[in-house]
Length: 229
Image 1 (cartoon, rainbow, N blue to C red):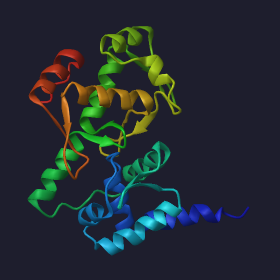
Image 2 (cartoon, helix red, strand yellow):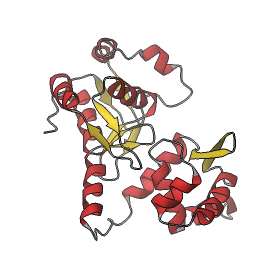
Image 3 (tube, rainbow, N blue to C red):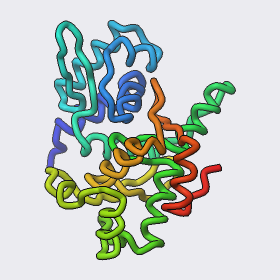
Image 4 (cartoon, rainbow, N blue to C red):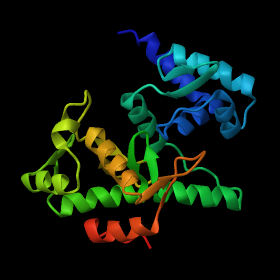
């Protein structure tokens, strides 16, 4: 059997260091202009535009135009999931500066994984939901229990509305820094959005790391028994 040449094409795109850096930035789930991606990947804007055009053509990245401006983002959850899986088997990054160490630690503690929570916070939230019997775990996914239906209703997450989205409901996503599974899918996204709405967490510019607010530390401890002090 001959290997699918399209697989080799995608693999070659991801294997380039500059393109891998751009894709890692885009795992924050937001759309970025080429100039910003160039700055964060430490390459020239023209180089970033060249790489982005290749990844758009390969359906790894999507582009939205607003007037004369173009914004790029990961095409979908499936692409993000593959990238996160690759990150889980890559060698650790060599830390060469205090700033790099600080950013790396922030990303390990709490970050966005495309459109849901990851890092230590993502794992602790998932474990809290499991330990409380809000969700149960199977080989391929999580399942919301009867107790969980009441919990999410009280937490003002409409499960019926979440289930209507055209995507996996409670996907298990392998966390590259924690090497364990966290809650992803439509419910993982809804949980992220609810925590942002409550101002328990806040996005940070130019990074996937998120910050936990003082009211968030209090809310996480009271609701999920998570101590992020």
